[in-house]
Amino acid sequence: MALKLEIGDILILKKNHPCGGNRFMVMRTGMDFRLKCLTCNTQIWIDRPNLEKRVRGIEPANQKPE
Ligand SMILES: [Zn+2]
Image 1: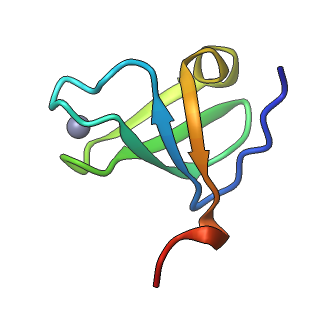
Image 2: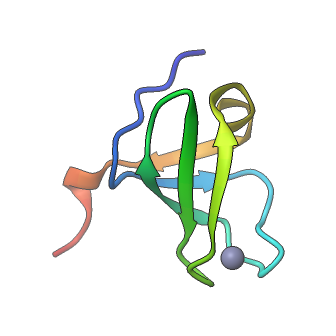
């Protein structure tokens, strides 16, 4: 599975962050991705294979309200 992920996209992951949130914004793409938890604002690094396994849904940046 090759996901098309862009900076600003909101990802819903299968596994919640320790803070309880499961929505993350893509901050940087590449071999490794930097995501920001939208619940507690913590930034995490994750490699693409692991990320693709964990993504449950994507809200593209250009479909965000406002
Ligand atoms: Zn969090």
